[in-house]
Length: 485
Ligand code: F6P
Figure 1 (cartoon, rainbow, N blue to C red):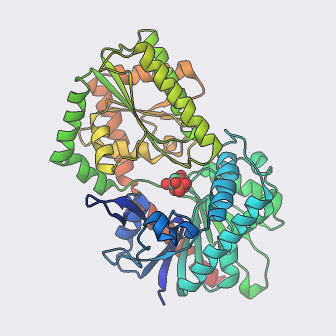
Figure 2: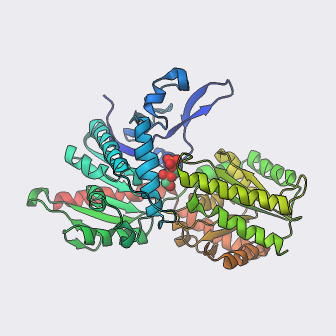
Figure 3: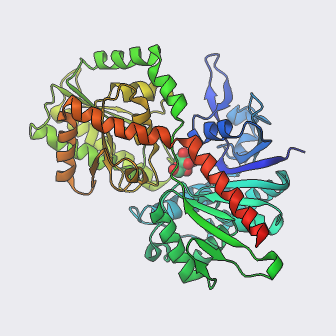
């Protein structure tokens, strides 16, 4: 049986199905930074990754309808064993689309969209979390470290602790943790908090997340809390603490830097500029098509700037890449409609034949193409209404080995805490955002370079490998201390 001394538990496996040139669908490594981080940080460990393959099992098992190849047992280079937790169509509807993405996702993003609480969805959430916990319990070696990721799996730490008390358990939340007054809306609030404190270490993107979580723990649990430590009940020998901390995630700097400096990328960036007619300024947005990302507010601000003549439509181009996401959830269909209405109106009113004001690409792009776009963009627009971190802003910075470019960044991203040298904006303040876009688009080369160097120094020294190392070192030292308590 496959077992690891490091077990990663995440909703998705680090592989994805891709259509190859020969017309076949094959599994390949997913592009995410988390995959590279874990691979680079843990070369000597026997690791297992537990997750969902992204297709409902009752569809996948009927290969005649999907033609999908089975999930491989491990990565091609042998870095990881892969263990699939199958989800049925009902699980996808109630656990993934339902509780995870129609209740938790909007609630944790300040209820920008109205969260929907259905008991049938939470039942599925509990059931699927138990399946993930059971898989982790089965595939962890004695005393192994298990690292559970994100909002879809918040019950797993306590469930796993009960099944396997010998394990060292860490949890990291990739999205914001909301203010206590919002969190208290949740009918299952106590169960979720209790689920999380099953971990030895619970990590958040920012200190704001830590404080919100501790406030909820204070209100919902009757257990003593000192600084960053929640003391759980138990007899002297098995008393345990849960420690809470902030660890801002980042990008795979060496990989992006290598792509950014390659001849192919530099040539592709020049080609993009040329194909757009070598405009004076290229503005760029790259986001999952999600209502938290502020794509609509950014496009409205840009359109107003064109209408008012503060940006010249003949000299300025905006590229908006929007990656399709969670398409069966109503709010995602709504934001798509809103964005596409703005794009078509702006292009209809202000574009010319062969020269639209907004180039809208609703497709998933490979990292190499994104890095070329980052290199081509004079101004990067990152304007979420709320975002746990926002890795696009850090990817842009990591791509600019020429020390050029300008980043306009929402204050409501975790990244804004680290990237103060960006043009910071409040996306709810359209006039303020317009001023910042103009300031970034017209800044001189000296100011652009000064800001970009400061941004690059921060991201280079706090890349995703640093994040992995810090989290796992903190987890190890906490559990060592527990042993001594
Ligand atoms: O930001 C949270 C997150 O779950 C990421 O980990 C993930 O890349 C993204 O949202 C998209 O999530 P999914 O397509 O799995 O719903």
